[in-house]
View 1 (tube, helix red, strand yellow):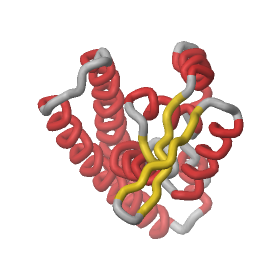
View 2 (cartoon, rainbow, N blue to C red):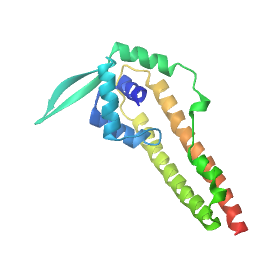
View 3 (cartoon, rainbow, N blue to C red):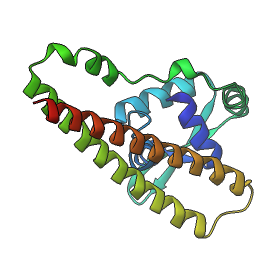
Length: 183
């Protein structure tokens, strides 16, 4: 969570609420978007000197706007430049699939149906994120960053999610057909 927040703050200063909402709307499939997890990460990053906060008034409300520090930029640059690690990608639902043979046959079918339904919802969510992302890319973009590169890799991430979701949905649909034929 900490590096995700540092990356978002590399793009622009944000409040804790703005960070939470961005994660909820765009990255909830990657990590938790709970206020507690965001606030815990912000507190840790601030203690470590990787972010700083300034107070601002908005009407009668006071808000804290977080910015990344040079130490945070260095930490983020070190993290993002490391090779990606295939052994870090885990799907704990595969453990459930591994043991599904121990369940009643009717429960197996229902478990797969339920998972397929969730995968369809996930793909719809990713398509919504893709549409929102495409609209942002076409909109007015502030100067000062290599937005073409930033957007290109963000787009790759969304495309990967959509492709992985489709693969998983199709794979489980074939499994469901096989289980229904055996029933």
